[in-house]
Length: 243
Image 1 (cartoon, rainbow, N blue to C red):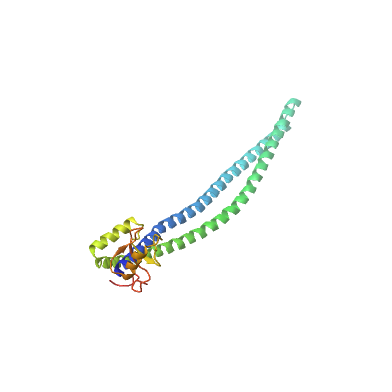
Image 2 (image 1 turned 120 degrees about the vertical axis):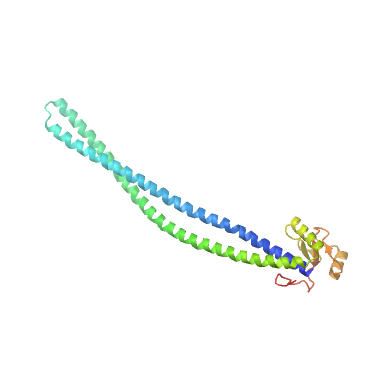
């Protein structure tokens, strides 16, 4: 029974390690998603800055074109003879000045938005550098943990082989079947008359037989192999023991 308990202890520890190992890639994936989100934000801000820069240049170019047209209109105005042409030229100049004013207002608005965006962009660049550094630290730490878990798993697997070789083949087959169909637990201690896995009472007569330890017994409720948990022979029976 001691070997069977130690065998199960191996299986439980192997299962726990495998659960932790499965979490490793998930954690790395979450780290990558976090980094990608910050990178996407930085890229979006960069694209907006480029768009504003193009728009500002376009506005400045249009303002320059209007200024050139105003110069030509002023020259034209000085050479006009008729009042009708003069009034038309004045209207053209007013329209050009109004358009120029609107463009100048737009250029100022773009500059203000660019200043705010450039401040955010600078903050985002600092943030992404911090995020990348933290990603590398966390990623390396996860890989380090996974490596250690894999080494522990390898050691326990070797111990499990030794334990399983020391168990009667029919009992081992029975234990493995129980473990497969009972949530990974095939052997359960009984303490104060209660199975510690299904948490139901063992009938008094069966519990007395269990205490005597004359035969292999199973829980009448969950059918797992049971042993008396208060028996000094089985206390602290960990994987460190050898078969």
